[in-house]
Amino acid sequence: MTQISTYKVREIIDDFAKEIANKRRQTAKPTKAIVDFRNERSSNYERDVWEVPTTLLRFRKDNGRIASDVLSFEKNFRPLSEIDEEDQRELSKFLLNKDLQKTEELKNSLIHGGQREPAIITCDGFLINGNRRKLALEELQKQFPGEEKYKYMKVVILPGQGDEGGSPTLKEIEQIENRYQLQSDGKAEYYNFDRALSIRRKIESDIPLEEQLRDDPNFVNLSSREFKKEMKRIEDEYLGPLECVDRYLNMLDRDGLYDTVSRGRDDHEGRWQAFIDYHNYVHQKLSDERKRVEIGIEEDEVGQIEDAAFKIIRKREIPTFGKVHEIMRSFPKWISNEDIKKEIIKISEISDNLPTDQTVDRDGKELDPKIIDRIWGGEHETEITKHLRSARDHYEYSHIAETPITLLEDALKKLNHEKMDLRSIHMSDNAKAREMIVGIRERIKDIEHEFYDIQKSIKRGFDKS
Image 1 (spheres, rainbow, N blue to C red):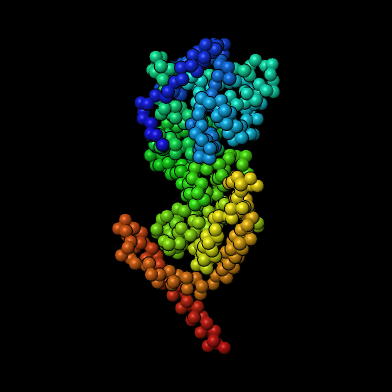
Image 2 (image 1 turned 135 degrees about the vertical axis):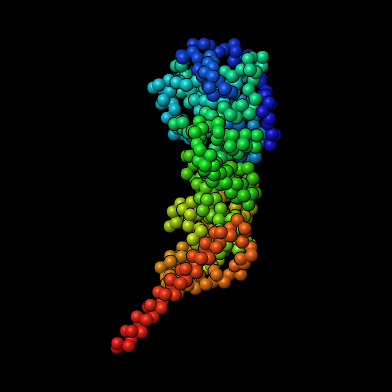
């Protein structure tokens, strides 16, 4: 990906800019607006509000709302060109299918209340804020062809070449999108999967996560500790799960095909929540050596466990097990049991591939990956379900069957584990290790005293008899 600098200016298409300048009209009310561009909000700098024909406004492919669709399309077919009419129709389809309910709500709002806030566009008509509004207005034009009000959109036009301040840089455009689209200000937020991709794209485009958050008024007054906590939340809910998605797609040789994971809020077959829970409940334990040892996972078992989890997520629907993300939440307690872990690892042995004749249509054309996933899931449903049911039943039985003897056996087994090498404890963990050792010693004393008292009581009972 090409890195952008603070100073690289977005290229302006002169013909588009001239057409906007010729056909815009200053009939919008209010006539002025303050937008979140550069320092204009803090300095109360007002810009003119114009009405521009919606036909002259164009979508940008770097719109975070459709990040997964754009990346998947370009991986599958070709690079999208923002100046190509056919590709503009593709971008429009992505937006329309992303969240049909929100689009309908916006259409109703425009019918009853009109356009309240102006959109923000570059001087050549590319939308930075207001993509869904253009889409809704175009839908309303079809529904009410005689209504003039749906043919124009209220916009603030950013400066162009030769204007005061100059054209916006690529970084400034990303910042505007961040301020308007990704911040929780009561408007509809991005679908979280697309938000994750958009946050990462901004990081790759020289806007670190910390800078993105500090640009958000919701986090301005946070203490240092609270801000770090918010950074951790974003990493846990967005960036970490996205890394897991990338490994999943790589496993299936589908790098970049993000629409096979989820296509938006209306995608009832989406897997994004499962990856969030896998990352937070499973992966973080597997990637932390101390936590991994605590639940009894060997280093060479990590890949097998992740592979099994990914196959379960791919299957998505498993009879009698509810939603797949709930299975991910159960994983840690299952794999901490040696016998159950072996059962889970058996799932990793299932092949990711299908015979060629099951992955192509009658004309030999490869089927859509989602159809292939459904066929694969049908082929392996019985085997996956069998292993999961065995794991669940074993856990429930062992949980019920736990006795003082089995608990003592488990404790002794862990204390005698071959990896119980105190010399490998890091210096920073010495105090914690000492505290735990003292705790173990005290608990052993309590158990010994309790056991001694029980034996004495039993003996007195025998003596009386």
